[in-house]
Length: 211
Image (cartoon, rainbow, N blue to C red):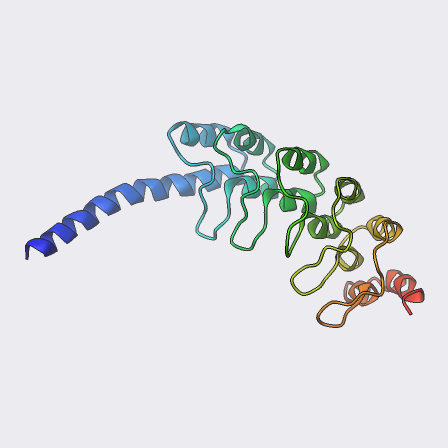
C-alpha cells in the first residue's frame, strides 16, 4: 500500500511539472506560426529549450521558416542553444525548408552556420529544386551540392524540378551536368516527372535527348 501511495504521489508531481511545460510548448509553436517574437522571447527567457519539438516532431526554427516568420526565425538563430541543423522526424532540416521556400538569405545564413548541404536521403538541393527560386539551386551548387543527390527512392533534383520547380531550374541543372536519362526506383525519368506535373512541353524537351 505504501508503494502505491508513493507511486500516486510521484505521478501527481510528474503531472504538475509536465502540464505547464506542455502549455508552454503549445504557446511557443502558436507564436512561431504568427511571428509573435515577443511571446517567443518571453518563453525562451523563461528557460524553454529553443529545440523543443511539437507533437508532430517539428522543431521551432523549421516551423518559423515554413511559416515565413522572419522575426521569430531571427530570434531563434541568435539563441546560443539553438541546433541549427536539427532535423524533424521526417529528416527535414531548417535549411531544407529555407531552400524549398526559395529563401536565399536564410539558405546562406544556415549553411554558413554549419547546416549540412549534402546529406543522405532528402537533401537541401532536392528541396530547392522543388521550389520557386533557381538562385537558391545555383547557390547550393556553388557551395558543392551534389547535382545527382538521391532521395531514398532514387529521385534526383532534376526530376523534382521537372515536376514541381521553376523551368529555369531544370535548365540550370542540365547545364550543371544533371542526367536526364536517370530513372528512380519506380522507373521514372525527368520527362516522366514533367508529365506527372502536366508539363507536356517540358516533358517533350526532356525526352528529346534522353534516348
